[in-house]
Length: 205
Image 1: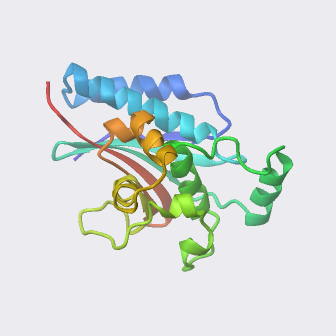
Image 2 (image 1 turned 180 degrees about the vertical axis):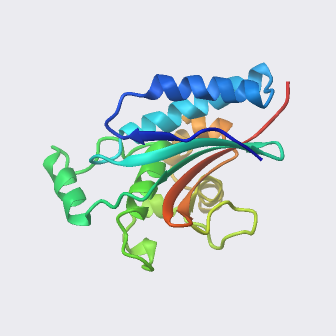
């Protein structure tokens, strides 16, 4: 396993360029070809964009990991946002909801936020919108990187296909950079941290 240094980030910060530079350097370290290097950079850009839409001030650590031909962009936080404070922030907007709640990365953002506002041991389905719940797995598989998995893009895709969701759901999947590049996005608990992993299987040169 090859792991990058950890970046200490804040959702209100301005350090995207540094992280993007690290994505390029990490690609060189693990000898990525041009296409894989480009895909890693695009996924990093999407991850940083999602971080900037989190409600309030959230402190995270971001790392890149390569193992057995799979690269993951890992975002972890142990910062707990008071659920009442989050509700107040959302209510303060004109629409009463976060402006970035739409789209695939909007669902990822919602899953990530919900995960670190939950009391320990509760059923996440009691706190999620129906659209986000489309991505909650029926069961966790052994190869998944989370100790407890709350949401995954691969399951969301499967559920959209099986349930014949409306055209908006299909359009979101088709237009999403992450949906078309990443092999999965997982949100859950890793150790004592709420974590998100953007998973990309290397294609080669």
